[in-house]
Length: 412
Image (tube, rainbow, N blue to C red; front, top):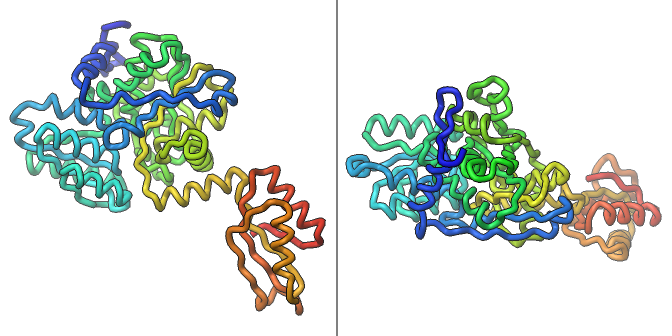
């Protein structure tokens, strides 16, 4: 396959040579992001696991690679007309920075629900950011209409060969940084990143297994692959806004069908636990979409022959969402307990409960004291507590200790 453009049906695939040309173009422009070993993941998998940290790329995600490749190849006339894009955030920032560096005017349409830090960053890079619609699909429709009306060049987030080739440079770096890699795991929304990585990796190492990972609540590829054509989802509900794409393009679907070995999905719980894992164990700030590959490895480590490289695709997370996701991840990992206890309504009862919790090593985060509810008997008080534990085993120890102390406990 080396140096030869493959064809899937009537759709020409991006070749290894295309990705190599993009890498030459991007040399000195993009960051060669680090490959960090994860001992904690390696212990689970039974062999080396590395994290490809595209969250440390310019603009905080891999999207800058494809955006710069696409914009740099515009004709002088196209550059003069300006560019327009639609994005939930990462593509917007990639286009905005690339446009600033190349002296091109950029307008980006973003859903009204786009995280405020991503909107602010897009404007900070010099693009005009317009909020429109409730979903990325609506923003895309508005952006394409704007392109028709104004003559600006529409920069699609994944449905273009130059974009795919630019994203594929991540795969070339993986091969150089981890020559013995056996499995590459890639976060996947519309499929531009996994298409490019697969094109690069399979060209040089066809034996390497490439796995695409989607959020289960926004997984358009399984149905589209089964149907043999892009099939739009009827709805999406996921915290991973960066990979919440309603349907792949014909171009990315062809790449995934021909070059990707497997498409897997991860749950919202998987994503939240993986985000918490990256914060605690890898010291990396990662957004939910960017952590999908890590989530897949954590959820089913035996499915990934080592050495494994999991691509951490982005780190642009809203701090408010981070707080919620961390709390959700801790709850899913059994590290939060929400309990209700009935105790006698007399002085010292609450103190006794708190002492019992302290004795077993539970950290009390919240306490509420209720004595007027009709469900309570005369002389009873209900105490609601939120506890931080060290994990499921410790949570069981806390419940057992409260039971031995004579408290009636129910989940909060």
